[in-house]
Image (cartoon, rainbow, N blue to C red; front, side, top):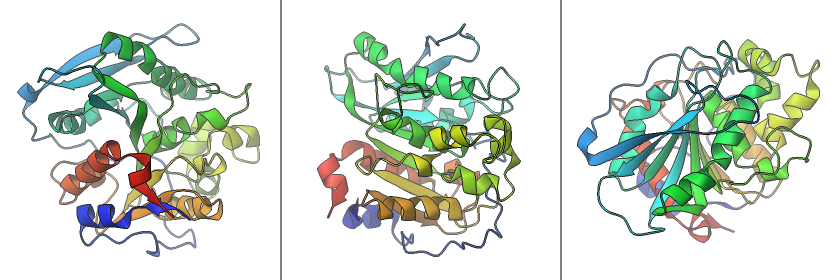
Length: 319
């Protein structure tokens, strides 16, 4: 298995335990896909970045209140093709009670580090989303990056990172592997494809989670794995592995909303396909804290995102 360069990751996260950490595989931890609370306010200076609302088109009638992304840019002048793009996809159980504003603190902190951040909003269960709309929206938002790049030529979009939290992590990992889909599947034939992914507390084995108590996955997909197996096959990250798309699966050891076993099972599945992935287990961090700026691990999360964005694919992996 090719893994992320351990020298890079260990230097960033210090004592955090990596891939070999046992997360528990007996299903006793509830492997659900939701987000339990709001993200804390960021410490970044709002004056360090500019924020522009961008509406993206969809295959149906777009909802201007939900089909948009906020683009965060560093305030300094930039030359063409010099600012790396990071796509953020928020969580919230694929449901409408939480939105992209949760990622505003994280987006500002990443932009303050010199990155462009494309923070995506999309339709969710309860606001016109669910199957297949939520997934089509994410595909449309990602593909619109090509047009955003034309408007903002300072962006680099040829070798970029997508980051998601919770349900958004499932969407992020799936978004990085859409090129593997058959032509008739939702989200296939991507125009823009991220080439590396950071999953934060993601339900990356949806079939396993849905059969171990996660009714929110059943809701968004409109049925259980036995009832709608093709939908799970199409969007479940563990069933859509691209060995050449590096994934870092970060997870809090104290997460009782999405159990760490989800990330461990995914990384092990990537290993079986000789792919590139690593598990980073954050000690005593729960589901919400992994993206909360007042959590002790927050700077480490920022560091891993930054390093994953900046590194070349050769630097990220080694045999």
